[in-house]
Image (cartoon, rainbow, N blue to C red; front, top):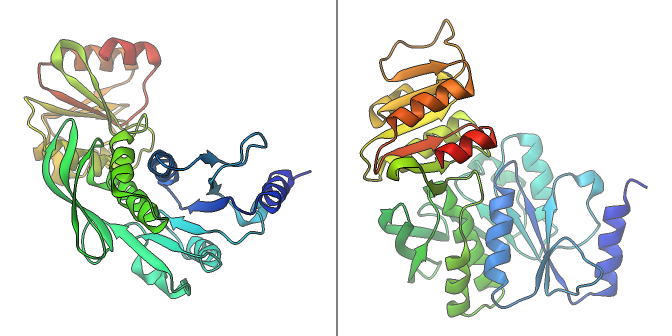
Length: 316
């Protein structure tokens, strides 16, 4: 019965029409968005991820993966976190056009795809203007950001945010936008934001050996994510800054000057650059010995590949 999950959702919502639905769609960033929504809305409302016959929540959050198995509903809100292709844009915006309200990531949804959006109830979020909601940074440390969330009325709402990386501020701006849309009190929104911490593997910091800091960014690995991670640690005061990944192709040569070590798990390929900062290791244990020898108090290791748990436990 391939459409059982769809039918289950439809039956549940028909039985409980007072339950509101938020659908999160995107090529990437859905998990961070769902977490931010759940923790923020959860300060006031009962929220579930998917339907649970034992709970009648105020909100159900649905992770949109495919139109083929998606229930025939009119969402109370659709969040579009990202988009890579024209086909994705058509699919995501077809869903958004049916919703009562739409929230679009201004930075990760190319403007060329706006032609598919016909719903007038649109709120954008992102890094800066012209997004309706964005976070204005005032201070940054390994503990996160201090600054103001700016809303469409251009109010500056002071906030402490416990994530790392400007790209990880976007889900928080979205969660604030959705919470305001559904009438949450400012105090509850602030409590929810303070509960948001990084998902494991998405710029999540931990204490390493000899007073070092390991930042695990291994959950989603691409040249873009490596660049974003390096940009983030550049802003931090640190005695040394090392990135560990599996290919020099994922490290922009423009980022070399921001680092003290570039550690590669794998062999050097023919097109790899010659640079004294780059070190290659065939095996995890060899890499571990080198990284361990370079750890120092206040040094940062940006981990852009998953490592075996036994090695992680040694480093951390």
